[in-house]
Length: 112
Image 1 (cartoon, one colour):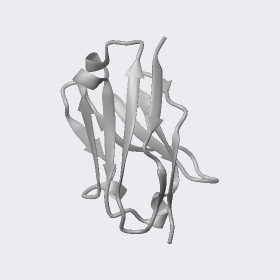
Image 2 (tube, one colour):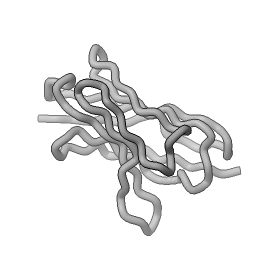
Image 3 (cartoon, one colour):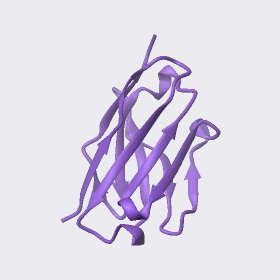
Image 4 (spheres, helix red, strand yellow):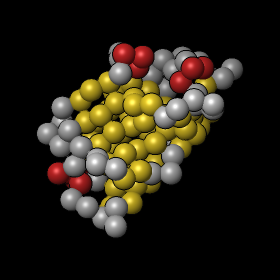
């Protein structure tokens, strides 16, 4: 059974940084593509970034240059480094293991 546990969320001021982590268990992590998604209040869940099993990354335009997805296969962990945070980045951030396994999410709030 695949389990994904996110951590690292919190309250940060605009311009600040956070690093989210997602630890996976129950599968051979290194074979799976991973992704980070987010859902703001009243909005649909949206893609933030993905990383393939081979380490190829994709980031949506709204976070390019600010967020970086990475993975450590030895630790079964995927990360999302978030810099220059903006109030519009406020959301619950979810980790996904493809094809369709999800964590419970971690809240990120950007506010002064």
